Amino acid sequence: GAGVSQSPSNKVTEKGKDVELRCDPISGHTALYWYRQSLGQGLEFLIYFQGNSAPDKSGLPSDRFSAERTGGSVSTLTIQRTQQEDSAVYLCASSISSGGYTDTQYFGPGTRLTVL
Amino acid sequence: SQELEQSPQSLIVQEGKNLTINCTSSKTLYGLYWYKQKYGEGLIFLMMLQKGGEEKSHEKITAKLDEKKQQSSLHITASQPSHAGIYLCGADPFSYSGAGSYQLTFGKGTKLSVIP
Image (cartoon, rainbow over all chains, first blue to last red; front, side, top):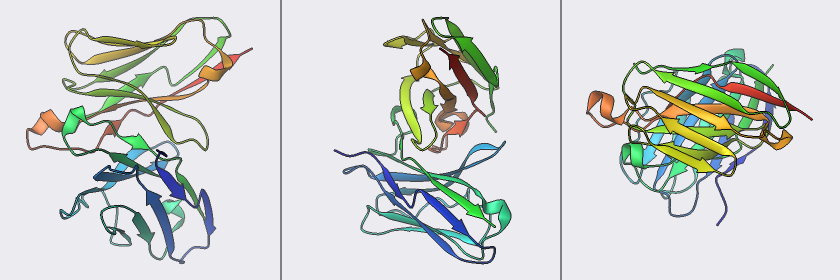
């Protein structure tokens, strides 16, 4: 079937506004990850969902960031009161399950967020 | 924490030339992933290596993991413009702490340009 999809592909917002980024994982994949790619910073992990378990939020940079995953499928990453340093490409990935190194993560095309 | 160093940071080659990109870890690698990134396409999974001395090939791209499992190389034979992009190595830190982890740690990438 289709790969991981993300929307919107680009988002420009004003400082202080809230934004929502959406991720549709590959059908049947139970694990879902959010990463952020900032210029010069590389890719950094944000949050991880596995099935119905409580998410691992250890990578979220501040309490302005939150994410949810409804019905074990679609996920939404919300950034409240956006700041200019939030500008980055937000990538979503999914894998068939969580199992460490045997589990290939497949990435979506990303959402490029620009905060003016 | 796990760090992955990639070299070179950028590479410009003439079409038809061979090239090698390296990824070096400060700790033993138990799962090493290679991805390619093009603008607007997210990360495309290339290969995953697990065993010391392992080598995998796909079309003109060969990836190797050394016996000590601390360095991986990606070799492209007879490069083509379609090979241009950013190559990222990622490691699963699952076995570093033994506690079970799932988010990938990435190198900062190697930007490859192929001149026709």
